[in-house]
Image (cartoon, one colour):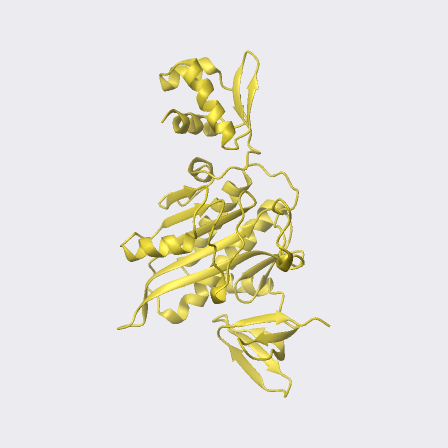
Length: 323
């Protein structure tokens, strides 16, 4: 397809002007066909400048998710990328593919989810063009009890990539949220299929949804004051493609050795809970007040209850208590 071949050439020469004559020669099509394909790409959101008597230039500030853009920055080239403008849910679709036998390393990336999911069965707000929604399939040789380590690997991968691209500090709220400036900018959903005979994971799908900017019209009322954007109004070249590649590269590195103490220290050092007064949230019950004391090396949270006793939380949800 001329459009896709043209886009590949433009990405290979991003921020560089290349003549219509050269494009026509390389693709063996007419100048009119090149002009029409340029129009299609502009309609898809690519910022392509026409330079009089010189040709066309693709701007690196074009924040369009595409396979070519991610591959430009991706080190783990063994990954198989499938990029969608919109999808129901990257986790839901990838789990179905995993059940059908898809290989480890398959990644689904989308600019919008119509049925995005979060933890505890909640929906995850996933509007078009203001976020990155991505799921990675792994088939690790790990017991089910180690799933928390993979969630932590993903949280550190997201936090470090945001820090690298934005220069801002990112924090992690146990167990699966990433915050910038005190607002949630990323949620992580890890889902696994288990082999009941040996307690090992058949596969695990690690999904992440990142708010790269404030969506048009702002967040829904119930999310205002809670959700934020990782990059605000910053203009960062190839933002979402670079973000996807950075997260995937780090996550693949960390997942290869999920018990690496360096990953644990990176997670713990970014914790926004330790030393804080919190509420332990139990569905259908009153919140239980506690103080977050420490984080164990299996990523369980040690809390001190109001009676002074210490409790170890292996899973669940907490919130920082407002005073």
